[in-house]
Length: 154
Image (cartoon, rainbow, N blue to C red; front, side, top):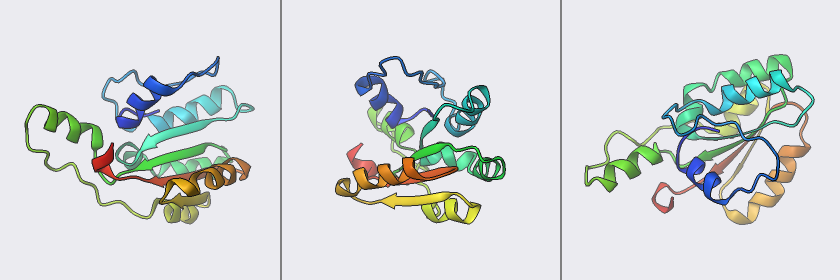
């Protein structure tokens, strides 16, 4: 898992019940999530591996998806896309600094995954999420589920 707003939520709400969670420990290492998932797969290729990243972190290492496709690394990736460096924006606003240069211009991440040879799907509303998560885990090989979010609501 990358750092970001989603990491705070995971730390607050997830009860892992023995499932290991690999994260950078809030050390500011944006982009850690997907490469770490690849390392987790290399250590335990028979275990299911799920990466949870934000769009800012994944954008730094998005081409690693082609490596996953090439080697059949079946990472299931939940990409939380708010088109912003959300954690940085929140920190700037908390200190009464103007949030600047934190919006992102992203590709269609689901389409990108498909161009790389992976499964790619996208949800834009909560009522689509259950079906999309089922499709993500039913897919063979690497797969990416892009969950569109509103940066203002996080």
